[in-house]
Length: 273
Image (cartoon, rainbow, N blue to C red; front, side, top):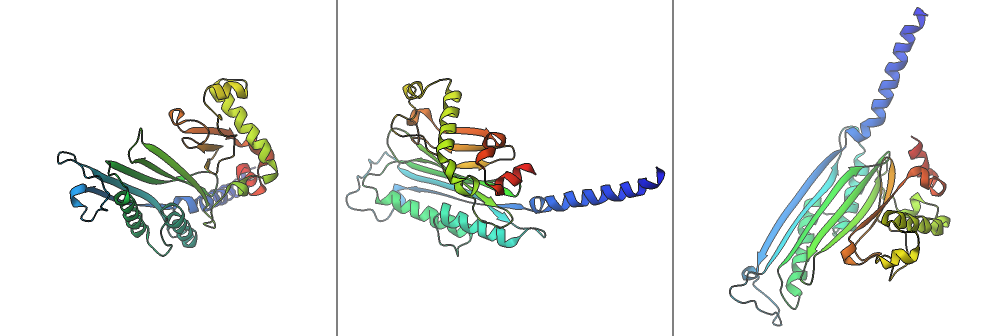
């Protein structure tokens, strides 16, 4: 028995090295953070359309904006192309700027466009627009990117809008809804979402759900907003998606075991690992 001890030692060393190499891609991933803040009062806006309603002298109307966005930076053992592709997607799809820009340049362009929207409104109001973009590690070799905009531009209440993207860390490509699920199962997924919503709301029928304000004006749908977390998949509905503003934003979570019959092999294999 004593003779096998050295071999066991070598085996465990190899196993540990393998585990470390598997994790290197994640451990060497670094997150960069860029931010910019702008606060503009009406006195600073030199050119305004003639139809603007001018505020009284004692009114201070402002445009208050802040943008803080995470982006990916690569280490020695991280694929720089994957990071670059993910950052380009953040710039083009979330900030709406040209792909050749840096993240900081894209933030400046994003803010400038929002400022123009503010000054082109017929009536000026005190307005704020606070934007955050955050990176979170999820399922194996997946990051979830949450882009949140908290906005007020007049009216009865502010608005919160969340957009969620998922990226493959190996390739840098986005992971869309039908990359995860077999599209032939869309009806089954909608039924699962409806039943989960009923359970979370403590009701037994669709009619009771509607009495609470859910799904009154729209049928259940499978949202493009979802997180691929390590142990679960969570669908996210913004305000007004399936319920009135007062009922807020809604998240419905499922363990991967519940979704196993509907998952494509690419995701099912990562769940096994």
